[in-house]
Length: 346
Image 1 (cartoon, rainbow, N blue to C red):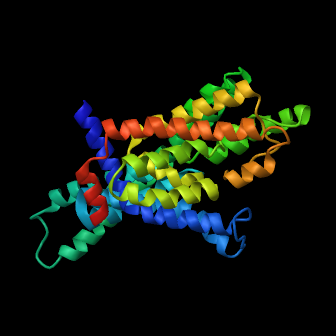
Image 2 (cartoon, helix red, strand yellow; image 1 turned 120 degrees about the vertical axis):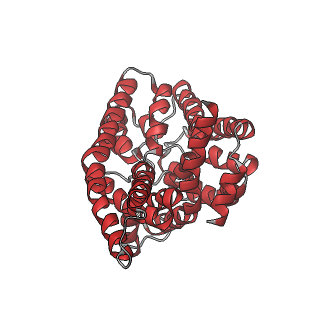
Image 3 (cartoon, rainbow, N blue to C red; image 1 turned 30 degrees about the horizontal axis):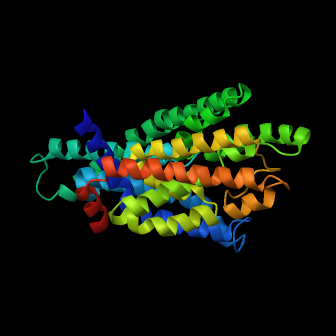
C-alpha cells in the first residue's frame, strides 16, 4: 500500500513539476498587474484569468497524458481536460490531473487495438481520426461528470466551514480550508463564506477573525521554506521565487502546485493553519477587512490599532509550524530522485 501511494504521489509530481515555471510566470504577472498588485494595469491583467483557467490546467493535462502515451497521449489528455474546464466554474488543476492521464491511457489502448490493422498508406488518416473521435466522449465525461463533482465538493466544503465557524470551532476550519485551497476553492470559501461572516462581526466589534482564516500567508510561507531547506531538485530551486510571490505579492495559488506535486505536504499547511487559527482565537486577533491580496503588506494595511502583535504573531506561528512539519515530512517522505530528474529534464 505504501509503495502504491508513493507511486501515485510520484505520478502526480511528474505532472506538476515540469510546469512549475509556468505557475511562477502566472504568479508574477498576477502579483504585478492585478488591481491590488505592485504595478496595477488593467490591460496586462487581462491575461491572469485565462492563464489560470485554461493554460495551467491544460499544461497539466497535456503532461499527464504525455507521461502515459507520449505526444498523442498528451494531445488527447489536454483536449479531455478542456471538457472539465468548461464543466466547472473554478480552475481545474485537479481535473487536469484526472483527465490528462485518462486521455493518455485511452489513446494508448485505442492505438494498441488498431495496431497492425491499419492499411498501408492510411496510417496518418486513421491515427488522426481515432484521436479526434476518442476526444468526444472524454470531453463530455469531463464536462458532465468530473466538473460538477468538483463543483459539488466546493459547495460541501463551504457548508462545513460555515458550520465550524458558527460552532466556534475556528481552529478546526483549517482542516477544510487548506485542502480546499489546494483545489483552488480559496476564493469561493473566502468571499462566499468567510467574508460575509466577517463583515457582520466587524460591524459589531470593529474587527473580525474571519478575515484571517483563509488569507493567512504564514502556512504557505512555511511550506515553501520547507521545500527550500529540506527539498531537492526543481521544487527546491524554485521555492525562493515562489516565497516572494506568495508572501510579498499575496498570490497564495503559487504554492498549491508544490502540494499537488507531493500531496502528503498537505499536512504541513493544515498544521500551520490550525496552529495560527488557535492563536488568533485565544489572543482575540482580528482585522477590519479582507486582506487582498493575502500578502503581508495587505495584512499591515487592515490591522486595527492595538492588534499588530496578535495578528503578526499568528502569521509567524503559522509559518513556523508549517515549516517544522513540512521539513520533517520531506526528511521522512522525500520527493523521489527519479521524479525530480524527470521534472528537470522535461
